[in-house]
Image 1 (cartoon, rainbow, N blue to C red):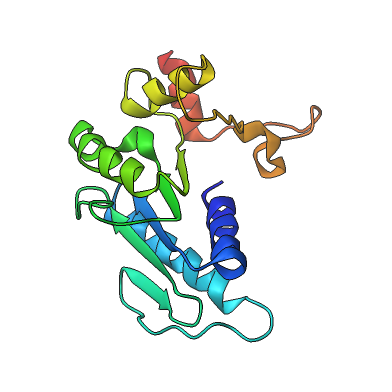
Image 2: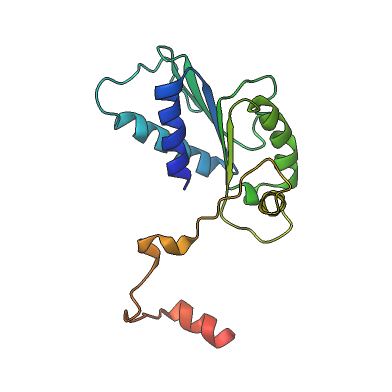
Length: 178
């Protein structure tokens, strides 16, 4: 779903800009993958592409559109402080540390209060900040809208009922240990 949000936000920049967009991940490796996704989206745009003025390890700037995309890792910068962001994507929020969540979320919420803030994650147990936000939204006690996208709706994660299951030595060990 991260790729879908990146496509949606990038389309907003191209169609509705000017605006600044921030994507914040939980770890450096994931941040590099996100920047690569943005580059892939840009490279595959049809027709004339907007010129990139600043092409660094953490940002892309499109001067003709008056828009920028910032990609970073939670904890590496105080995102949002003093910024005005039209689109923000926080990824894998359930995997952020308590300090990362506390230090960034308030600033980001303020920076994106007139924009669109999306927080998405794969689960990571109960009681973390993401779980609390999701439950509050589901109960109607939040400004957020809960969206649940189960893994099994993706065909690549499912088998036909008559498909034979193949067991590996690792699976056999796990079954025997239970």
